[in-house]
Amino acid sequence: MLRIPGTALVKIIRTLHSLVARSQRLTLSHEWNATLYHQISGPQVSWGKKVLARVPLRGDEHVLDAGCGTGRLTRDLLEALPRGQVTAVDISSNMLRTAEEHLAPKFGERVRFVRADLQHLDLAPEYDIIFSTAAFHWVKDHDRLFAGLYRALRPGGWLHAQCGGAGNIDRLNRRIERLIQSAPYRQFFASFDYPWEYASAETTAARLGRAGFVEVETGHEDAPTPFPNATEFQQFVENVILHRHLERIPERELRQQLLGTLTRQAAADDPPFLIDYRRLNMKARKPLT
Image (cartoon, rainbow, N blue to C red; front, side, top):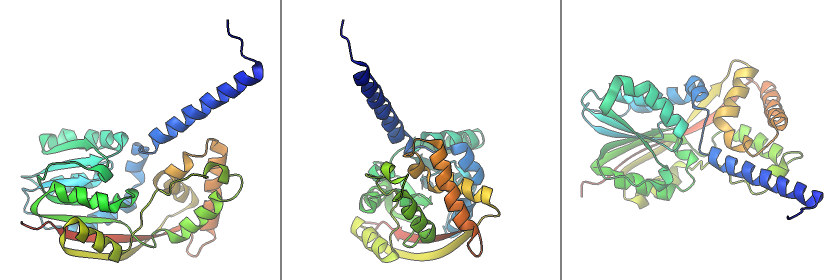
């Protein structure tokens, strides 16, 4: 019988726990608390409604909702397409499950749900319109993103999208960066891959052009977003902005400590509890030939 010394056994157990925790973090990095997100994503929905209002629709198009989340805007799309259909795409199984629960009973076969990574999108060119809000900044390689979207459009099809742009949440992000580079947090962020791509309007226009799009329009829009109190601010930051940061911190106490620091800093702002969102709008067409 193989005998393992006690100290070696402890090291093995710790290594196994570390590998399991790392595996769980890698799995969770694509997942969200979809039930809570559905309840607190009011800012994203309000921005998205403005984008959707600018999209000209006949009512019979096939639309790709790229990064559909829990389907709150997908519902608005479907209601604006009485003779059309929507393909709702998201990388998160939790988001898609929640979206299907809310939408399938009413819209049936007019909506289908596809789990896919927008950075590696491989869909047939069958869409008249691609619509997306609050999703593209979670994709790191925008050249690859736009190439996949271009392939998915029919000739003459349009892309209408909005995401976080250059300068998005700058004040909050500077505070986050200072915190995670300090003790006791820095040990968890030595190889952290920054989760967002906040591009400028000029860079985005060039990328869309390289993908083959024409009639490209891009521009920034400030969208400062206030929260009524510390509880709602912290809940939003925890579940919408920092979930990929926080899943790297194994101790709940440390996670809450970091969030508490950010919330206290925001309480001292004038006005308090305001997140400095800056949106990037984009519109572009795939040529007919």
